[in-house]
Length: 95
Image 1 (cartoon, rainbow, N blue to C red):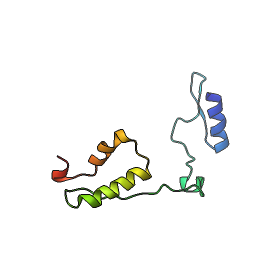
Image 2 (tube, rainbow, N blue to C red; image 1 turned 60 degrees about the vertical axis):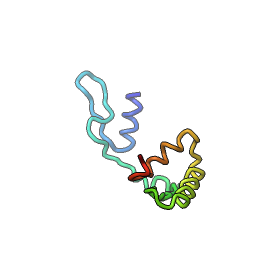
Image 3 (cartoon, rainbow, N blue to C red; image 1 turned 135 degrees about the vertical axis):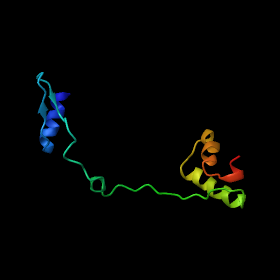
């Protein structure tokens, strides 16, 4: 595996270094080549971000409708519903 890492480092322009015991380390310092993830997959779909209301105890019907849509969209499993919903509560609603 070390030889494979050295080969990869050489192909990427990194300079592998040798230790005194004769073993080769692919990277002793930080890697010089860093891929730009924006360019790596230019046609990859971006995850959709859904904003949720924080439930404070007011307008429970509106909050329940939005949280149900969220859980349906992300296909949240039943055993996670209460825990995840509690993250979106504040004040007396969280108690």
